[in-house]
Length: 286
Ligand SMILES: [Zn+2]
Ligand SMILES: [Zn+2]
Image 1: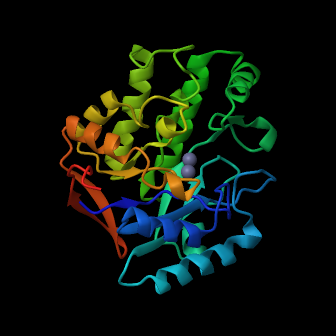
Image 2: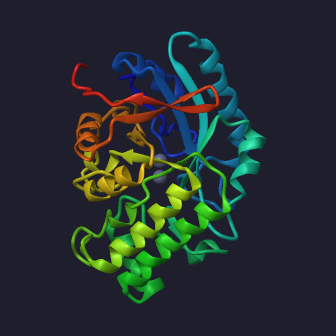
């Protein structure tokens, strides 16, 4: 199968290198397609998202690389858009403004309206997760997790986008401390979100970052959930959420094997404005 990664960060947001360095390494790895998806601008100071003033430069650089590599490697321009009610810009407007090829929609910050109200669940620091859970939800994990899935559901219902990013990532810093993924209340929440994903016709990414960063020993979404997604017919892509060129295809073999075990026969590929199916085969030939 063709080797693709559609979730890549560069130094335009919180990635470590230039887009050109990513492309150079993608050739070494034998990638057929590389999509750039830096974090969309947000209306407050932070250390991870693309600054609005640099959006035109980001767009121009990815388009330049796309042209330069035409016929050799497919390069695509995207953003990973954060959904924060009352704060984030409408996805469709930003997509049009920047002329993007596709959009990944993700929830990293839970809350609304003001930066001081946001529970940051996605960073490297477990202490930040724990502190936010105490501060915003009085340590009640069920309320905290429900807020994450509610905000995700709202994004699915209110916004237009192609791929839903790491949609069960709220489990990352749980590490078996607060809840089990087999708890009935947790499964209900996730499966409700899954049915919205299916209704909306979204692609779900299978994100390997937890494994190679050693923050969570498994994929986002988890294996049991991939089985449910397979039964529901939700299309998927395998992505690394790379923040460094060396991570571009990290743990793709494990993702492909897990997907096959879950009954998947194909993954999606972006081709000039359209997502098309391609057969899912063993990637081990690399
Ligand atoms: Zn993300
Ligand atoms: Zn990302």
